[in-house]
Image (cartoon, rainbow, N blue to C red; front, side, top):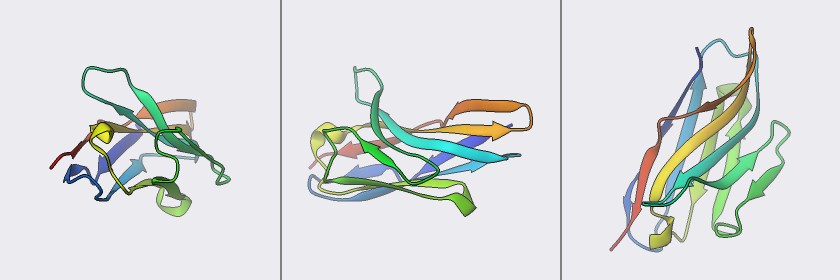
Length: 119
């Protein structure tokens, strides 16, 4: 069974920074695209950023230039460095990954980590 566990969320003032981490564990053969999504209060879940196994990155327009996604394939870990945070970045942030296991390839979600940007 594959598990994704996020960490690094918290309360930060506007203009501040946070770094989220997500570790995938289990009997994993390979991980393809990994990404971060977020769900602001009262809104639907939305894409933040994705990164392929080859390192190709994709960002939502709202975070371009402020957030950076990266991954460590040896550690099955994806990161999200968030700078110049704004109150509208407040949301539950979820990790997502396409994982190949013995039985096949499946998409997985983490449990989410809260990010609150407020003075």
